[in-house]
Image (cartoon, rainbow, N blue to C red):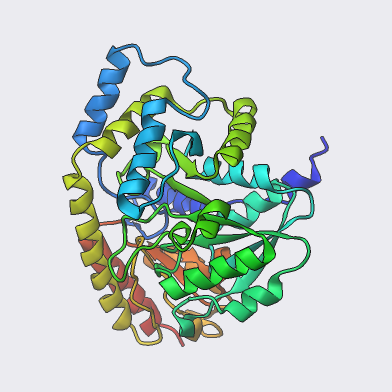
Length: 396
């Protein structure tokens, strides 16, 4: 059977691959500690689950409008007005089956074959693949650790060509855990204005901000707001990963195009999940605030423990629930006779020998690094980092 060139050009997710392998080893009875997948280790708050049950009992199990029920779209708009002072209205909101579909809809709506999208590395593994799925070309611009992973504007400017259509901003960042400064966001917004670029702003971790100020790039100016598509969802802030609830906020004209596309690709998102999301946005925030506080403490803990490993250095995460430690000192060394050539081999050995699952940095365009998710218990963090320290001590 012949497969399309587009489909065969899409790489599988290394993050999900590592998580799958770790789960297989756990099923075999092995004491694997996983820092792989980015999923809160908290249960969905009870009031959200009760709202879903009530929706089922009311018979809210039928098709809904393709972009989502009006009450939810308005609640999403209200949230961005309350938190960021940004006015979109329900007409500017499209609810989808997770933020990943929201990104998919966005690229399908704005890209023609050959259009280029600037992606700042380290990047979330899925961005380049979604661009390719829309027949676009990802153009990678590296942000450096010595700059706290804040991109240099001259590097972005040099990447712009007549084919450049958009730039992706991920704030707070997966996998770096950094939060962009206002100056960085303002510079990106100005560059987008000069070259008439769409700004795709992934803000899925916006409530998980522990240091500095979380700023949406759409706040920078009216021009920035007009050209920005905000991507967000319920998975991270409300521990609702399996409910598959993502959304975009954008100019209503673009929202209409994305709605048309979604109407033929997946139709409306789950009706029950929409009512659960509505309850989450309009209900009490104590569970969310508690979770954010726990993640903030874990960020300090994992940074402290990583800093205690000779040969590893890592910047303090400011948001999300990831750290990106530099493990370049291990490259070229051997572990029990096996030479470590790259981050993939490092992670394979760490999992095999120490039962610790991490994601190789190459998946994020950051060779010489690994990503660790601290969406796991304090006990797991302590035990896992102790094993990682042993691993480094046994290198020669």
